[in-house]
Length: 356
Ligand SMILES: Cc1ncc(COP(=O)(O)O)c(C=O)c1O
Image 1: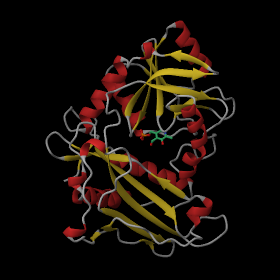
Image 2: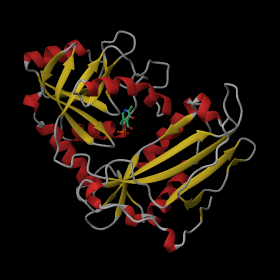
Image 3: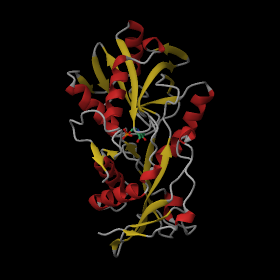
Image 4: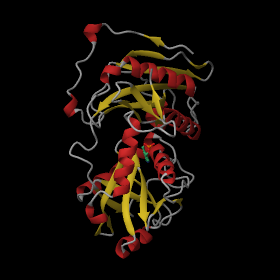
């Protein structure tokens, strides 16, 4: 599968935003990758073209029945000047898992990776050179067939857009305060919580707003049936360091199998730390906090890499974690992962993929 590139005239290129105030997901680059699908003919040739509006029929099925999936990964400007992706094959594999669950067609992952690398290479000047900043990559697939009726669409659009993003922690690596909700749930086993489909995020907004209104950064979700077992924090996975052992909820079917989660597990095990994937009840967490056995809590995800938790609010009581300080394991994981991502540290697992 070859990629067609429709070049833009130099005069039409956008001015690049200043590196210091990139924010997250507010600026978009000059080009995007687009590939369409029809049931009769399969995927068409991928095209790299000028970033811009789509023309969609108001009956496009994604708008009505929610066949919409996406991924999120980053390109990093290495200290050696090369541009690196982090575990992109895992994102594309997860996207095809999402596609399967949502009855959408799988995309040809190898060809898409090659096209995505071409897109990032073309946009290499958009990859920020500032510490902690990166180029966020958003592959997306939506149902475009114009029809009403709940069934798999027969036409889709796959596209990749790029957004330069600033350091997640411009003022340093600071612990966040988390609100445990037992009022709302994110996902239930047998549902779609283990894939990256748009509706999961729409459903989470109300709980996030309520938590923010109470002064908390994010929500910690509990399982949908007993509202007892810890699942995820916002759009990241969660880890607990209890008596020197790292515990994280098992992939039970209702949480997203995070790529950062998998990286944390592999790194911690390589460092000789015992990592246990099992159900963990919120009462066990609170008891471990009260008894002093709980040393650290942190979240893992592409956006922030590692996010230390400084306090948990459960049933209107706030429990400080590790004196509201970043713990040594969270710091070590953050440094190690960023080192690999920016092309400095040893990449023993082969996670770093140069784009050219
Ligand atoms: C619901 C949810 N959980 C966890 C994660 C973390 O996954 P990853 O480490 O692959 O970014 C994400 C982000 O993709 C997410 O949206």
